[in-house]
Length: 85
Length: 304
Image (cartoon, rainbow over all chains, first blue to last red; front, side):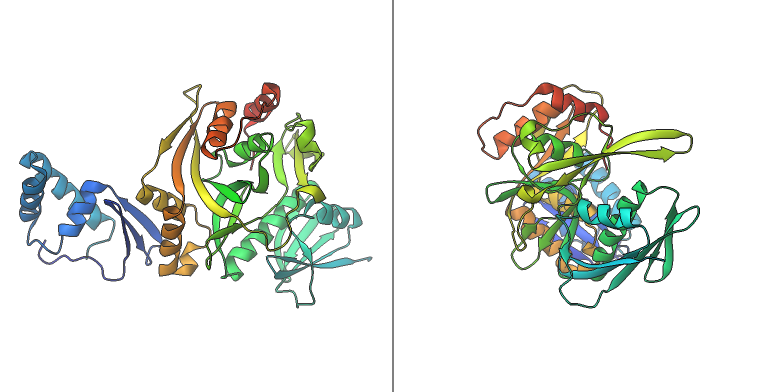
């Protein structure tokens, strides 16, 4: 994950607790739900998926295995959508 | 060959139409009375020719072959769709959304959605509830003030059933025709806004509500579900005709539009209920509408 980063050309709109991303390259728009939005925010700040999960568990006081799975899946999804490079 | 030519403008964008079919010429102008204004001396940016030969009506756009039809009626829609597409392509002054829009007072409710989501059905339904027709297909947003401009094209309706109350018929003319698809002939009609329904140039409306309709065949009632603003921006962008031309501004515009409006998803299992929900939302006193009229609209549901 260390080698991946958010694409700098993406257009991002944060609204309430969600994020909308417009990809000018593909002209597609993406909507991140509240959990995916937190992961998106922490990506780049934290050094690895485990750290992102730890941050979320600390704040939300929720089950760590579910969060870890969510983080892994969200990052995979973001990568598949071409939002990370 | 006797040619008739007219220059007209849509949103101040100049077009020219030339044809050798006088009937098409007159009817095209009549059908699009609300959408077009007479040319204002500007040179046309897009020129259409509709030339009838022995077999076909052949449509050309700026001299290039566009389409051909064996019958007259498909021509109207075909040319107007092409006009619409030219606007998306050439006119960068406005944001175009795939959406219907109706107004009460100075406020508009947008009904964005892909084809067959129920935009035109709701439009016809809401006409019967006394809403002002803005469009059933193309919402035009002025980026400088985020207000919606009318795009009063004729509403294309499948079937010859009555879909409007006597009151609505004072404002719309219903033109019936048949279209041939292979070996079958299908009845269609256009609801054409008449002078009393046509909004003056430069009329615009504050967008107060954005309601995303969707049919649900599995249920019999309708309900409104509040939508998060991010989901509304996402859906609005999905229904943008030209957001890609606005680069970063497209997302910003949709975002600003959504922030100023109340956003909902409308699950439609029943048209009467759907119209009444919108009526309640927009704070208008309930109007009694004949259920038969709404049934006629609802049963067909095949609107473009």
